Image 1 (cartoon, rainbow, N blue to C red):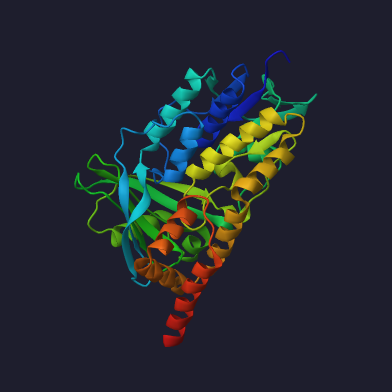
Image 2: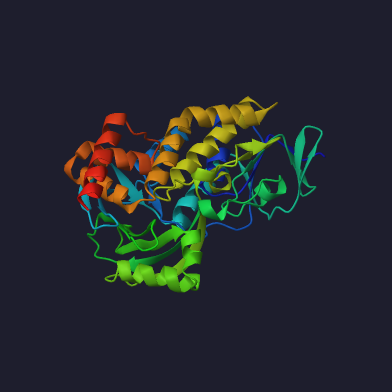
Length: 381
């Protein structure tokens, strides 16, 4: 095999592009091949939210100004399943950038850094002589699987798909909103909980709108998925008319399959790096893509253990936090208590944003404050 690459990346979304960018950042002479089954720009069903934590990752990758031409969004409104409300200014602004734009910019930045980008649909992998051979045509010392929720590479290395109990499904579209709308809205629904709708203004007179719920709850309705998802979005956001609706699965981090096998590393959605509380995945994608590239280039002889250690340092306590909160949040009353507390205490609001959109953890005193309110409310009822 003459076509040998230091790193082959399958999937050119945020996780794959981050891996490619980081590899060339660490070693400008590294041979990096980035494969995707589609040409860019291309649409991707997603909430389009770029949190402040993701901006930090972009800066780490050498792209601090990648989305500076998009308006920052500083206010967040959340309505709990029981009707508790909070509207506050986030500590650091978020952005909303359509994935057709965001992903294409990342891929172009990778090209400019010397990454080889090819359109190719991967069908077969084979480990041979210390390399991973892709479709019999190219070999990588390490392969990063960044090919999304329905990852082909994950299946090819024998890792099962995300269990239905740990998978959400969402529908996403766009709607016209006033040009000055600068509030990100999350409206939760008790029926079929956990479930919520969102409206994230882009800043150009449109907003990314959608509705998501757990896959088992959707199946339990016994109704066509399209009817449930579209219908509930319309009921929760009756003032908005959505278009270009597309559905997508979200493999949640409560069922992480492990960092990879052999010389294949799982990043982004392919590794179940989706926040179970919010469905946020772009920050996780950028972070895990970067860490996968570091393990591939700096620990090439045995990348999986190095990647596992890096993930534990960066996300270990945070993922334990989200695992615990995901279980607690199965009770709508717990979320009601959390939102009611956040409405009164700015530190709790900031903490919820950090846990839901970044890598935050929950200090015990703040957790106790929410639990006390939850218990008091439960006893009152």
